[in-house]
Image 1 (cartoon, rainbow, N blue to C red):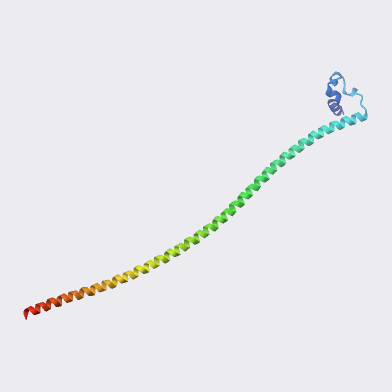
Image 2 (image 1 turned 30 degrees about the vertical axis):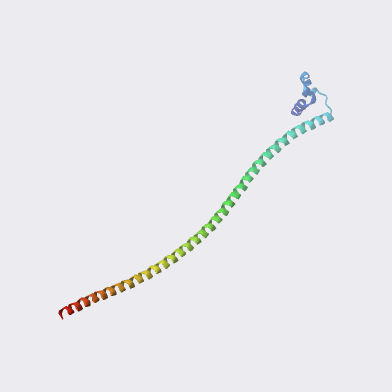
Length: 158
């Protein structure tokens, strides 16, 4: 009860104006009726309720702002992870496509080298045929010179 009277004395209009300092003999000496006490208590409760509610609302807002920042950060992380996953899939498809291109190039190159090998084999066969012809021609020329020399020698003796 004395706490309530102290609060009433502190928050009463008389205490606010400084007139209570002149009458500091006792808080209980104030003649208060029920309606005045009710109004004083309502005023005190309103002020305290406003202060408490504003503090609670501020704390709630601050906590929700923190949660909103955390949620926003989590959303960003999820988006980054999804983008990385999509990028990884795109890279895998690009690597697969480039691998197919390299395989196609390798097949073309192998086909070209095989064609060149066939051409070189054909040229080698031509050189072998020419070599055989030159060998036959050389034998023919040698046989021709031998027969010519033998015929000239035969004509000199006769």
